[in-house]
Amino acid sequence: MNRSPLAALVILAAAATIGACGGNEASDRDLPSARAVQTTGCSPITYHGKGRPELLIGVSTILAGQFADHGIQVSQALRMVLGDRDWHAGDYNVGLQICGETTRAGDAPDPKLCRRTARAFARNRSVVVVLGEHFSGCVAEGLPILNAAAGGPVPQVSASATYLGLTRAGPGVSRGEPARFYPTGTRSFIRLVPPDDVSGAAAAMFAKDQGARRVYALDDGVPYGFGVAEAFAEAARRIGLRVAGREKWNPKAHDYRELADRVRGSGAQAVFLGGYVSNNGGQLIKDLRAALGPGAQLLGPDAFNNLDALVEGAGAAAEGFAPLIGVVPNRELPDPGREFADRFDKRFGSRPCCFSVHAAQAARMMLDAIAASDGSRGQVLDHLFRTPVDDGYVGNFRIDRYGDTTRTTMGVYRVENGRLQFQTAITPPADLFARR
Image (cartoon, rainbow, N blue to C red):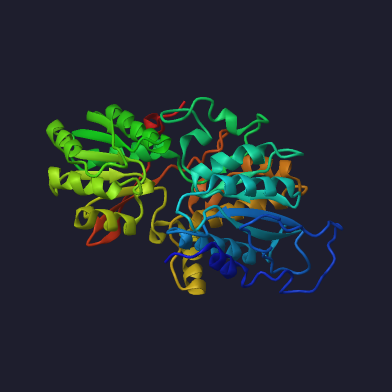
């Protein structure tokens, strides 16, 4: 179900009255009350502790378009975690301010909105850490601004951005990246999902496990699609598969029959579609399936993990398509994650999906870092990088010096009878990653 930004903000603000659960008690430290971020597309401050919030976690997520429900679940997960801590991080009262990165005009992030929100977070000294953005493209717009904030970089944690160039060089990464994202020279971005080279490697391993000997890699011509397709092809070669072809598809083409005929002529048993399902991926799947038959493997990265778009674009040809995403079903989570998912379901009436459990894990990390700090952005950033996570919602991991998680498990799903069904989890070895 799609929602407008206004409708989403109304939902988020429904319980946002500051100090709703207590009086205006004084803090032990005489810190000023947090100031709301003043920019378009942001909710009021959400806070349910005693007194007034002193520090803020700024949030950038999806509040409009076909993925709006993801953003709503992320917001719900954050409120649960802060509620578990009574809206405290150590001695600090902590509130949330949630901002959207999409508009009603489309499902992709709005670059101007991403930059405007980042500038608002950077200027507001109450904001000591940012969760987001959801889309890699939005991170690319906002990260240099947050990194160059007056007084030092604003720590940023993303539960969903996978573009390799945000942290490393490698296939599909533009020249000058990742250095251009860190004008201060200090790394300030952390992600809790594996980057795209891990996705490509996992897809190659899955194709081989399913019996493929020859594979074909396609991309949609954008950096994300090119990078993940290159990662797939490189990993495929390293595990002994033959890459029978490597080319681009034109997202504006009327059909892909000629391309599908070339793939069939190559003898490939598996085809990896690096790119976005929104770039005419449904039509591509339809034509590939018609040419290759039901037995061919068709795989894609997390940008194809959208059942509605798959079925709408490909129809019955979507059956058997296998997207990969750095998320496993609730039942596959470790005990703390399953317990959180059960409580989420009881409270909100739906199971947490997509990256909402990762967002909850990010919230726990941010609160722990704030509690261990003097309330400054610099110390929060230091603790985020230095503190390993044990018994986390998504498992045990640490953040490496680049800002990447050491947890590199990918979930493999398949469209079966019109539904996405979990197949397996794959953790590729590091020697298959396409990074420098």
